[in-house]
Image 1 (cartoon, rainbow over the protein chains, first blue to last red):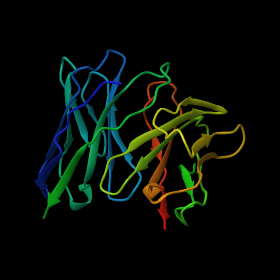
Image 2 (tube, helix red, strand yellow):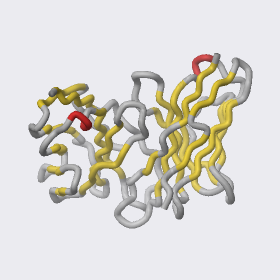
Image 3 (cartoon, rainbow over the protein chains, first blue to last red):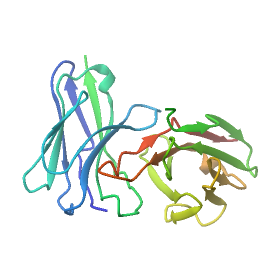
Amino acid sequence: DAKTTQPPSMDCAEGRAANLPCNHSTISGNEYVYWYRQIHSQGPQYIIHGLKNNETNEMASLIITEDRKSSTLILPHATLRDTAVYYCLPLAGYSSASKIIFGSGTRLSIRP
Amino acid sequence: NAGVMQNPRHLVRRRGQEARLRCSPMKGHSHVYWYRQLPEEGLKFMVYLQKENIIDESGMPKERFSAEFPKEGPSILRIQQVVRGDSAAYFCASSQRTGTNTGELFFGEGSRLTVL
């Protein structure tokens, strides 16, 4: 599995866009970039994923650089409920039966 | 479609007792992962199972811990002779691993084990 680097913590004002970076410079061609978050004491929650193109859903946007070595998760209008630990992880295609390792993630704090 | 169900949600055991944690994956999912999370720490991979097979148990302690995912019924994480250091939240996740949504893990709400 590719290794990822994320800042250990970030903060953002409520209502502003939160931009969470992730470096995955050793990502391989068949690996997607996935983002999850874990709100305190709860089970982690899927947010979004992508391969090459930028993606958007009701929760967030994902920007992947052209060389795929890094990505940014964007929460367009952060709320207090977005306070959580955010994990970025590259995951291989369905033919690869491998364990899934979570890194340390970024602890995002939203301030009122 | 019910999500991943874990039970019990909270379990208290005395040192030396056994703890059994159960995980029912989402319907149609045949891949199960177990993670352990100590207070204020990240998710640590323990074991990855498919139906009736252990695919990767490299994150599981060699002694006292075992996991299974039988053909019928939930996946079980078993901890024998528990010690205080086993106190943690244990999360289960399931996946279908087909198509492009390979990594979309669906997590349960966790089982919190407290060892007295």
